[in-house]
Length: 156
Image (cartoon, rainbow, N blue to C red; front, side, top):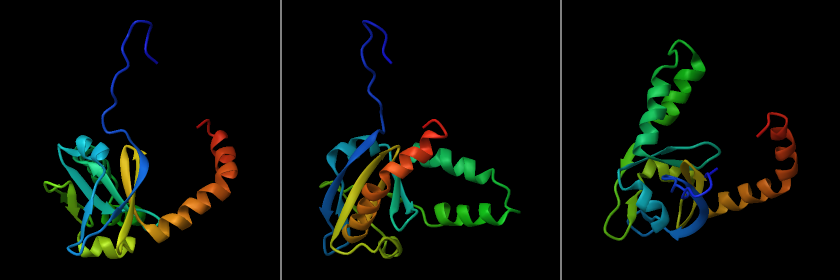
């Protein structure tokens, strides 16, 4: 919390909210301007969990990759996680209209067709198909009370 007389600091790479955007015939997806400004130093997209894509600022992805590289490759879970995150990752670049090209294998993973929902989750962005997002959003609403109760046990 800011001390008396101290100005609030702007937190970089804080992604929040959800936005619906169309995917054009060339497979390009427009990103919200609010998100693009914090991704100017570069961004990485990879397969996410639960059927979405994860987008990280390049610096955050590098931190994650460094952590993953320290996992023991003798452990099956470590190998699987590193394959999921690292082998499916690719840098993305924005065109002049703020669009990115999503590679076909990632579009297939997230079942992206014509419309995507782009969600900010503080230090990462998730990209969902509109249909999958509806299901996840419904599940979040239905299970919110139970989730909060469970997480309160670990002081979240």
